[in-house]
Image 1 (cartoon, rainbow, N blue to C red):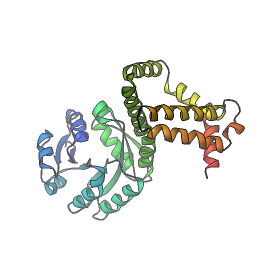
Image 2: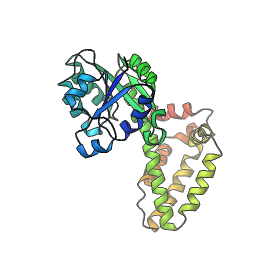
Image 3: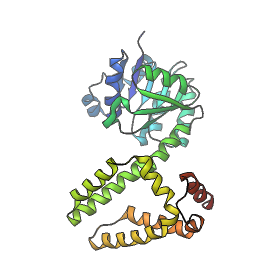
Length: 282
């Protein structure tokens, strides 16, 4: 018998994952409260109760604000033996709340965390699973064509990984946009993009990020002063430097915490710097 997967929400995630699953012989259908979006999704649609009764696995891919509401609606039709995988980008606390909702009718809950942009990497996008049924769910979804891997039996761990990873991905997105807005205002947007693209293409992330962290101690005061000048320039061209002002404040805090005194020279490892800052911030 082929695996039957029902998507709750037929937006980008569903549209990107469903074709790969169908290529593996999985039967896919969906439900979306937004009729217009549902019609444009190209996915076979079923009423909610019928979809849940039909599916072996129910994958929730709604908006963050609708994750709990979707779980509550689905719980009215779930029964023992059904597997509900919440793939929404919510906090660990929300995941645990959804787990309780899904467990009430006796269904199995699986925490899911999508890492990366499905619009770019499609079904190759890494998915972490968690919870008591997380391991078998990861194996099942991997066989169904998704890049699913088991992370932890403790519900909330995979979401913590996802949320903290977003400090990097979403923060970098905001930083890049601030750079490009300022670059356009100054008439050098393309030059900045080309320079940074060339630099990042020529060095590994480990090399660049590792050097920044290990040199944070001896350089934090100098970098603080440089960022003060950067913010002066941004104000001069009429750009609100939200990210740049936060960066200046971060370097100022590191200076005040005595990081330079602790590390007058580049640290031997990134872990030493992180451990010192984490300890001082307790």
